[in-house]
Image (cartoon, rainbow, N blue to C red; front, side, top):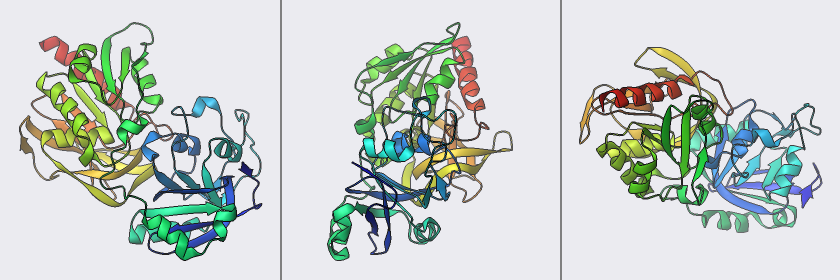
Length: 380
């Protein structure tokens, strides 16, 4: 059931007891997840439909949301994945020629409970200081219950640490995205929470992409990924992704070119022997500066991750798969943003080069993957 702006009260309760009050936005009811903030000035539909946001309540730092509506073409997956949505000033109308419906109606139809009229700047500052944390959003009659009761329910929600979520967002059966024009390569793409723009970028470069479920056996992955294997973004704690790590190691053992992004960067890191850890509040948005240490260039990137790889940035590491270097670093906090194997054809980045939504600075990485597969084919 849709809530008209201002028609029903809503309350947001953080696990540390802080409370924000506002109005219902989207569906009426209650929802729980991890409170995180995203700094994108636009691209809210791509954010909402990014499977990496599964079980997270997203706070938009941009104050005005919904002004260009939503449309089928900009969805990055089959549904909205965020657990809840927090905005300051939702647009009352959609004023874009591509809009097919209002954002509030889309949220309501998909059962996404949100809250508007919140001081999102104060909430974001709180999350920066205290870190991402569990949260509940309650609207309608649920918002009238005592805060102590609502807080008790929030504290009963499992934390993101230890959450195995990739299998929950992955497809159930193989999907093939044909190459645009001549087929140059055939790649197995392990769906850990893949976005629709990613296989499109590869297809435009002559890659036939076989999107495989996260539970795919190594034998099938290698049979399909004759030229390379791709590991996608996705939600949850990479420390739980043992099957994905096994798939990466199978690809490395077979010397298949490997490219991973976001969650794929973390599982490659684990496969190489590095650990992972949870960031205080993560990187989420479309304006995160990253340096490519192989070229010295700085790119503005689209990101969505709450975990990172624990690898030394000041030296080359010796691993069971040879030498590995940190290829990219975040200029805000020196977090590892990419890995490059020096003795095997494998690399990864922590951000989203498909740029949906976001800048196109990182599209070259798909070309780098093609170059890696071309070189591997020449030496086979």
